[in-house]
Image 1 (cartoon, rainbow, N blue to C red):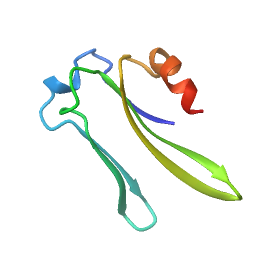
Image 2 (spheres, helix red, strand yellow; image 1 turned 180 degrees about the horizontal axis):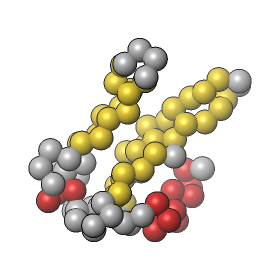
Image 3 (tube, helix red, strand yellow; image 1 turned 90 degrees about the vertical axis):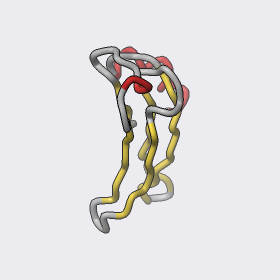
Length: 82
């Protein structure tokens, strides 16, 4: 699971140009981009999960907003995606 959290508790609408990108390192292609500051007053986001399926690695973009300064605080919201 990939998450973004504001440890200070500041919400993303207060951070100018808050974005997150997931890039494939082998070819430098952008796989997913999320604009964090336009989705409202939240301080966390569940970005994506990577998993094995049929012997291949897959990525599933989630992009779900949340609240939690740490991964542990966000875990109840992450659990349904596992």
